Image 1: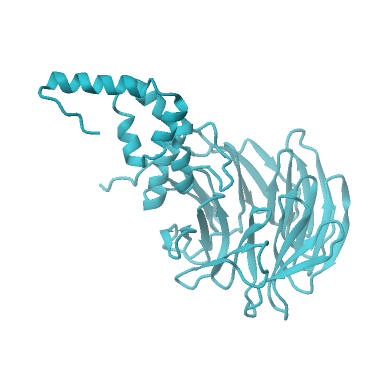
Image 2: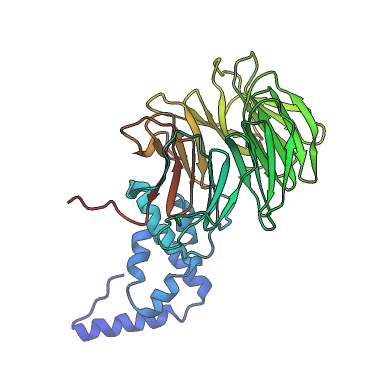
Length: 407
């Protein structure tokens, strides 16, 4: 808006009258007016005066903008994953995610090569190292870990392959073929012995556990019994599983060494095959990670270097979108912000890529290991930090901070 007047005094008076008129409008109208402003204009508007500053900093003003940006905590369905963090701050940090502005740090190191796995739960990071799982408190201001774990979950005779954290339990599968269910509060644990070889993958939702193993079976369990409810012969090694948010079905990803699709969806109650996803997987294109975005949408990745998006409402024979790793590396893990962003971990030199699902090329690439080549076995992120587990270290990318200045 251009304020015209003959003198500076007249201009200031006109600005004051316009501001008073603006705040005589109902809040609904003000929200509607501000919804037409883009990020930079809204930021400038908030600097006009204290009254506008406090109004323009409300989450309701920034919600529409935040939904269009990556990793702001607003999902495609409109849910807010991090309501305790102001949306304006999250949109600001989102700019750093878009442009790859971050500070790299090594959080933890160990001497021998491991296959670690991590999970984030609020301000706690869970990390598996060999046969144990440690729970590390994260400092809310810096995202750094405390040196010693505040809790330790053990019981496996060999390395932990995968684990899942729920509101009440930590469920882990190991190379010893066992599944351990730890109660997070009272420390009680229960051992499930059901697989003849290592448990490569598992998932847990609402008291239901699904596990997959190198012994070519998938098994369905409940938290109330240590005996498998059902066993499904898979005729191939099972690398990944994921339970639908509705808990009515689950997906298995296999090594793709046989003449059938490595991605199959099963009914939970009857343990019957519902459908196969895809029809053009080449031999050896095993699926290493599966992530549900909604009950009808999921993401997969694996040895064939592609991230694929599937919509179960459409034909199961073809994915709706795919993104190719440009250096022809296998993709070990993926995570999504539930809206526009995907992060993937590659098989060489700790390479992480971020993707905007509205584009075909990756947004940014981060190489965490240059001296020794290691896969990114697992990665997790929140709105400000990304954590990645490599063979000998846990790395972090801090998107609140810029890179350290060179001396």
